[in-house]
Image 1 (tube, helix red, strand yellow):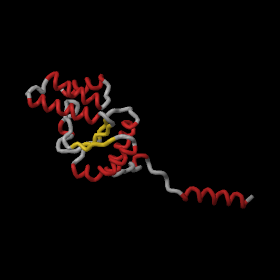
Image 2 (cartoon, helix red, strand yellow):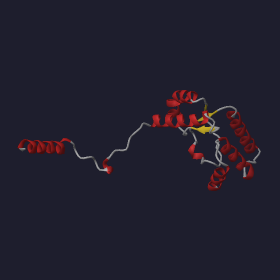
Image 3 (cartoon, one colour):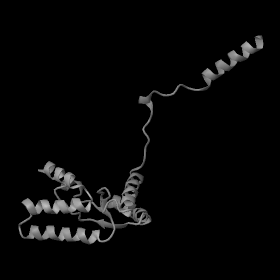
Image 4 (cartoon, one colour):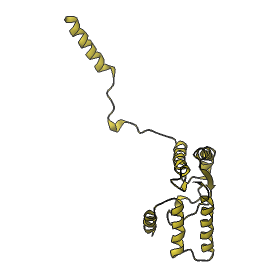
Length: 167
C-alpha cells in the first residue's frame, strides 16, 4: 500500500512539472506567411473558380512590376493547371468600380477563359474612344463600369451598389 501511494505521488509530481502551462490566447503567435505565397494562393483560388466556370474573369492583386516579375512564371503555371488563361495587364481598365489608386503604376493578372480577353479589350477600346470624343461621363461612363462588373461576374445589385458608393 505504501508503494502504491508513493508511486501515485511521484506520478502526479512528474506530470505536473513535465509540461509548461499553455500560453494564454493573447500570447499565441499568428501564423505567418510570405507575401509571394499568399498572392500565389489567391491566384490559385481565382483560377479554380474561373476554370470551372463560376466566374468569367478574376484578377490578381495589383502589384508593382518587380513584385509581378517575381511571381508571374509560377502564377501562369497555377492558372494553366486550373484550366484557365492568364494575361498580364500593365494598363488595367480603370472604371468607377475601383479607385484609380488601386492599380496606378501596377500590373494585374487577368484570369479568364475565351472569349473574355477579347471582351475586356473591346471594353477598354470603347472607354478610350469615349475619352477621345470627350464623352466619357454620365451614363456612358457607368456603362463601361457595368461592363467590367459583368465580366467579373458580379451580380447586378452589387455593381449598382459599388457605383453608388463611388459617387
